[in-house]
Length: 598
Ligand code: GDP
Ligand code: MG
Image (cartoon, rainbow, N blue to C red; front, side, top):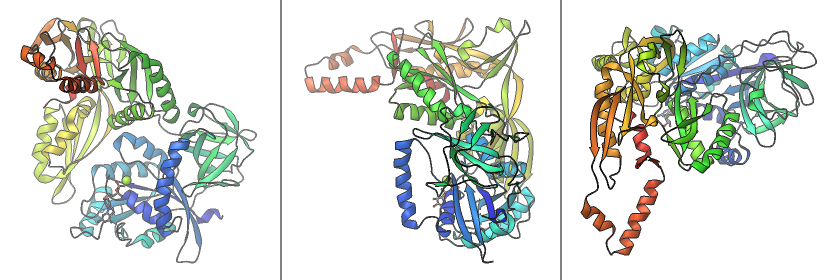
C-alpha cells in the first residue's frame, strides 16, 4: 500500500455526543463489517475477551475506503476512551494519528471534555475535522455550534461536516474530509524500525500483544526487536491488524497501525509509550513517549475473609499485568488486618478495578474511603508523601501540609453561574476567570483541591445545575492547606481505617456528620456503642449506637422456626461485607460514610 494513501485518525468527543455511534457507522459504511456481522462481532468479541483475555473492541480498526476521486485509501481508526480518568489513554492514542474527528452534539455544543480533547489533539499537532452530529434532532442548532467552534476553539468551522450518526446522514462527507484533510504519514520506510506502543493487552496464548503505530521502517515475524526503554529483546512471532477482529498480515509497513506479539510475558517489558526498534539495526533515538500516568486516588483494599489475602495479592498482580497504572503495596490495619493500599488514576478507575477483583477473582472486599496523596513537611525538614490518612503524622511534628489542586473547567448555562460559584467557594475553590461561549453559556475556571472533587463536587455540581454543567480537570500541582486528621473511636478505641484528612475549618462539622452517619450505619448490638470523632486527644463529637431492645431479641429467639431461619439467612447475607472490629461489626458502608454525607 502506497504510504500516501494511508490515513490514521481518532474520534474525540465529550461523552454522549455520538463517538461510538459514528465509529460504528464508519465501520459499516466502509464495508469493514456488515450490519449483521457487526452484531455478531460484538457477541463474538465478548466471548473472545472472556476466553483469551484480550479486548478487541474497535481499538484500532483498519478499513479501506474508495474515495470519490477513484483512489483506494487505507483508514486506521484508533478509538479512545472518553472518561476524564483515562485522559492519558486518549493522549497516547492521539500520538499515533495525524488527524482527529472532533464530534460535537448539535443540540449541546461544546462541553468541558470537548475542549480537553481539543487541547490534546493540538498538543499532538493533529489536523482537527469538526463534525457536528445529531442534526436529525429538532433542537439541533448547527450554526450556533459552528459559532462556538470558531469563538472558543479558534478553528475554521465553515467546512464542519454535519452528520446524523443515527440515520447515516453525512457519513460519506466525513470519509471524504478524512481523505482530503488528514495528512498521510511522513515516516521513512528504509530507516531502522521505530514503532510507538500505544496500548497493550495480555493474551494467555500469545503473551503481551502490543498495539503499535509504525513511524519508520517495518516490522515482521522473525525479526528481533528491542524495547528502547528497557533494552529487553524479543523475537516477533506474529504481526496483524484489527478488522476489528485480529487478522495476521505479513508485515506492518511505515505509517501503518496494528499489533504484534513476541512471546512477551510481562506488560512491564512492553510499556505503553515505549519505542520498538530493530535489535540488529537500532534507531539512534527513541520517540518522545508519554508522560507516565501517576495514581492520584488511593484506598485500602481488604479481604473480608483474612484467608483470601494471598488470593487478593495474586489477583492484583494479574490485573497489573494489563494495567500498568494500577499500583499497590501491602499494608496492615489494626482494624482490618492485612490488605493493600492501592493507587488509581481516579474514582472510575478505582471502581473498575474493585469490580474486576470481585467478579473475575471471586473476592469479597472491604474498601476504605478514597483519599489523595499529601505532602507533609515536618518541622525537622523531612518531606513525606502520605497516601493513607492513618499514617498522617502527629500535628506537633508537622510544619505544614500541601495537597494536590486541579485546574477545573466548568461549562454551564449562564443562569447557573451563581450556583456554581457558591458551590465552588464552599469547596475551597479559587475563582480564576470566566468567559462567555455565546449569549447563553459560560466557561468558568476554578482551582480546586482534588480531595473535594473526590468527595462530592461533581455530584453537587450536577444537582445545582440540574444536570447542565460539564466538568473537566487536570492536576495543577500542590498547594499548602490547613489540614487535620479526624480519628473515629468506637467503644473508646480508635479505628485506623476510618480516619480522614479534612480542612481544619470543616473538621468539627465533618466530625459531627460522620459520627451521626456511622451511628445510623452500625447495626445495633447487645450493648451500647459510643461513636466519637477526635482531633488528636480532643473529642469533637459523640453519638451512641443504642443497644438492641429486649423485645426485638425475644422475637429473634421466638418459636417460629422458619422465621428464625429467614432472619439468620438475612444476617448471613448482610455479613458478606462486614468486618469485625474489636467487639463491633462494621458494614462496608461505614468505611465510605465520609463520602456519603449530605
Ligand atoms: P459517545 O459517548 O460519544 O460514544 O456517544 P454514543 O455514540 O454512545 O451516543 C450517545 C447517545 O446518542 C446514544 O443514545 C446514541 O444512540 C445517540 N446518538 C448518537 N448519534 C446520534 C445522532 O446522530 N442522532 C441522534 N438522534 N442520536 C444520536
Ligand atoms: Mg461511547
